Length: 364
Image 1 (cartoon, one colour):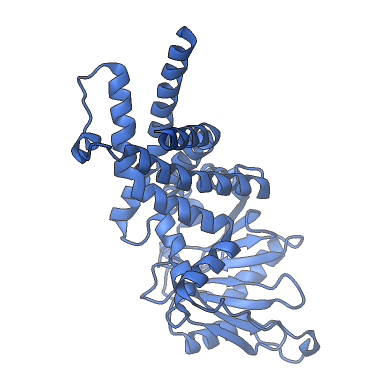
Image 2: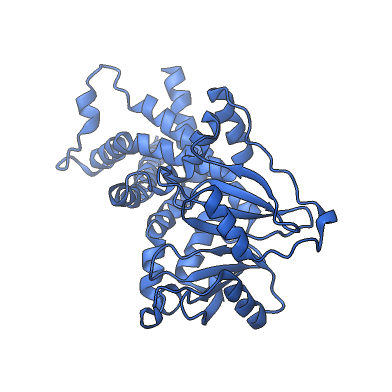
């Protein structure tokens, strides 16, 4: 009983400490599960290509880059999301990952507009979900909250386990019971039904914030070597070869014949041009296969095929799609949306139970 009391207090105060952050993260996460569909619905002028000009002959990526450079000469290109369907536009990220977003029609090459991420509703929600609008400190707070959620899920499972062995009682809600009993039943039953999903969300969420320690932990469990580090670009090759970005994309297609999802541009003299691809067998929506090119000579520096990577790397690569519900298509995305409301219900019922207990102690 003494150990159970310690576990109970641990569970209670972790919930009170991290509850509001978990509620906020859960609700915003539920909404951004369908972020792309919602943004297309709200902002079709940016997200949808002009089908009237769709003659199946897309303009070159270099043409797109030149157009954006003329329109935004003071901004630095970070990455380009390639169109993944006949109706999707180019998305160019400028300056940083959450900076200026610029959209270009893939058929006409027309500049469709631009905005900062926090200037759209869904972009603002995504920033709340990932960093609480305060950057790295917010990411750390959410990472620690996810760690506390992991501990709460384990301690909650221990507290739920009936001492008399009658498991069925912990799975039922007595809707006609008095209010205090009803609140307890809801908290207990929802907690056990959601615990596996919460454990999964918590661990995958931790991996997105504390990615290096989690990757090392996964590699340790899988007895796998760390992910290889690509060699840097050599500034001595500056000006030797003048390859266009479209030449690099054609070479990338030859090496890995799969759709290109993103192209990342170098931000330092030693960085590479990185072409990211999604192989058909991958769960990750953006793919985790990369081809690194020397930014000066266009030489292939390294090829990372997600399907032939080490076991630890393959496991780690699947944590993000598990977190966002991409692994089972629409079904798991809808399930992920629903699970996002469980922290709110669990926090509310837990808080009510805590307040009821506090009132009893005051009376005594």
